[in-house]
Image 1 (cartoon, rainbow, N blue to C red):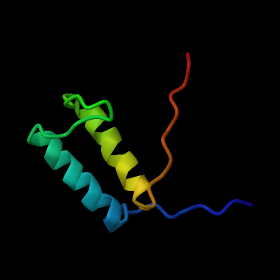
Image 2: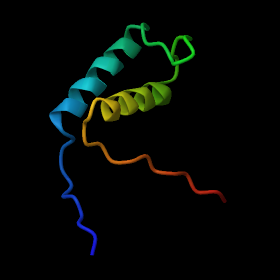
Image 3: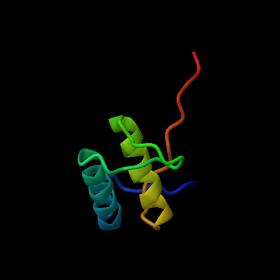
Image 4: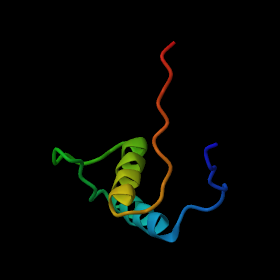
Length: 68
């Protein structure tokens, strides 16, 4: 039987990383991997979460979109 993680707040490490990246987005200094400026909020959130995961924060995996 698989163990389920209790729902709650995101770990502090993840929150601080997301806060930092979103602040960069707000000030228009956030760049994507290809070097272009990020203009879409969803893209900024994706970058923030991936950076937080890379730094070791325990953030749930991406949800895959369903094909209709």
